[in-house]
Amino acid sequence: MRFEEELVALLPRLRRFARGLARHPADADDLCQAAIERALKSRDQWYEGTRLDSWMYRITRNLWIDERRAVGRRGVHDAIDDAATQVAGDGAAEVEAGALRGDVDGAMARLPDEQREVVMLVLVEGYAYREAADILDVPIGTVTSRLARGRETLMHYLGEAA
Amino acid sequence: MSVDRDIVAAFVDGELDDLTARRIEREAAGDPALAAEIARHRALKAQLTAHYAPIADEAIPERLRALLVGADNADGVDTSLADRRAAKRARFEPLHWGALAASLVLGLTIGLRPWLPAADVASDKGVLVASGSLADALDTRLASNQPADAAVRIGLSFRDGAGRYCRSFESATVDGIGCREGDRWQLERTQRGRAPTDYRQAGSGELAAMVATMMAGDPLDADAERVARDSGWRAR
Image 1 (cartoon, each protein chain N blue to C red):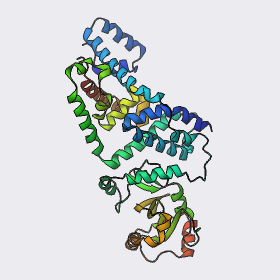
Image 2: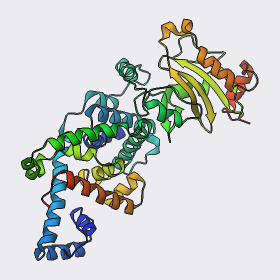
Image 3: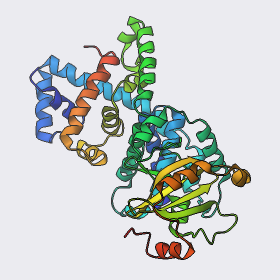
Image 4: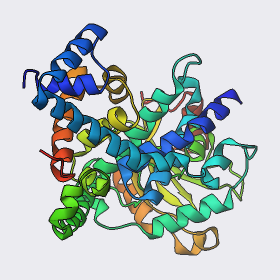
């Protein structure tokens, strides 16, 4: 039962992470649901005392990647078209207004998947580079380079005062 | 600016040791460009955090909570979940097919997205495999001896050209052929299942044709099937 309780406590963060990956709220919750079901089924692969959050993030992220591979790149183009429309529609004053006026969803949609997941883990979920590297199963240098590229793109679209 | 951009990022992310972090702070005091760069990184982080924070404050949808709280439905056929699955499948878009089919040996004609809550099918490294009740049925159920109302009905058990054990199956949600690979059932062929009421008359011509092309020799008889099951479906 402890396992389920810990999972429930994790849900708010997990939903946030999923929303960053999947964008659309219903898709994000489907992803969460699948992750929970997977976790319940493979709970004996989780060792008590190790971090449940990292394990759940890893499951969620891997399910999402599977899904992305299955649908190919189709969804990304839709998202970019959305974003382009919105950016073009913004007046210069709004771009200048910067910070809170920016279309974060639109800018995030322009990131390749592998940059978006790193941005979510480090900048939003607050994981250390090392922890993000473990969740994603990549070297730490890969995390930092993807993060740097993702940041550049986001700053560009979110209209920083440069 | 006196400091490399990656270092600025690491500074803002709290990844630098205390000594280096303090050095950056000192330098920023006398280097407006560096100070601006730090501010820029902080602003981005703050913007992202502010954007996503409200999601974590939302009420947890009941369908997620229900999976974990009072989950005492071990044998429960959760109708709402089944309904959702059916609705999802109806939403299936043909464009998914190409990518999915390419990853499978014989092509795949199912619209399931791998992480949908269809407990019967899972994706493992891009390959569809049986899971949950489907895996259980393929593992244990004998075609010669199955309950009339079984959710998953085993059709034929046979060996394919590679010597693997394969079994055809039908269920309300998915029909197909699973072949034993290691300790799992790789789904070589799947199609949308039929509602229990039209099982029989709808027939399964396509599936039968597929079995016929895959099968090496004759289908297993009841005894051979039992022996194969008891040996864990290991190909010789």
